[in-house]
Length: 53
Length: 425
Image (cartoon, each protein chain N blue to C red):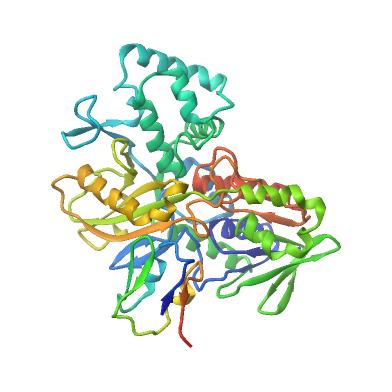
């Protein structure tokens, strides 16, 4: 999972992450708890989450 | 008549509800898997946080949004907040709250002024209603009238909370429209169920009138035929309509029909779009067992580094937090030059909260920032370019096309109401 420069830090992704793996402070940051499930990505309003293919 | 709405944020849902109620065929296309945009709830650790707005309507049950909800038959209960208070230092001359503070009611804002300035401001309260000031920023106007920085601090706090702007960024005309609306419609209120209480009710109106809401459906193009908006393209499929209402702001809307708009005749509109400045802000969500604000209205905090104001919506609707907890949210304006330094801005906000609530126990739940493409307002208050576009049958609603003097969602409601008057049939 990669957060690109579009991120504004709105925290929407955090609320949909089931692993508690996203920390937000001005910008989202993916922690080691991430299992790359990709659930968060479609909820991002600014297309800032890139899911690896 | 068929209407297509782009975006299921508050402006889009309000438009769709109103049109479906009037008998139009309505189809809403939303890019995200959820509806509501920056006006819905986000469930987080048992709390109903919000995707943007503060679970609060600036003019409560008497305002333009409440009126429009009633008109379309949306079943929402909005509770008027009991009061707005201002936290001031115990001793005049203190620059912050560290030596103690007290809270005064908003309508006694003249209290910290000298006797002479109190008389002057009492006179201004009456005279400006008949003859509102024009032609400067709010801050310039205040400084030209009363030489007391208290009023500038209060103005910054009020504008920061309600518009996410500083008093030197907002025109005095816009603020006096806001003040007039406060006289007309009254102060804030909290919708039961938070923002989602409202969007759920609107969706019910839309679907019960036969309207369709499609999530995960991104519009890639606005169809223009014979110079007029004629539908949209979603996932390669064309959907035809008699008119299109866009809830994604003027600039993004123009991006969906750029081929048509690149002509020389639209140069002025395109130039206006480039000058639009979205407003930025930071929301800090707190959880506390004991109330922090202690009432259902707004606590304005003019003597801070950054935090402009705070509300505690669980004073009205305890279901927005787990049993025994309060949800308290602070807002701070972010100046355009500080958008690149959000972490520092957040740090100052957190420091402010420690000084506003000394000795109180609370936990920071989530810190949310808004700017640029997901801002507080797509057009800063007072700069909204209206609801029409150069393309007939294409309208823009939402926080990039608010009505004058309309704070946040009230401005959205005013813009939607105005758009409905222009629609044929």
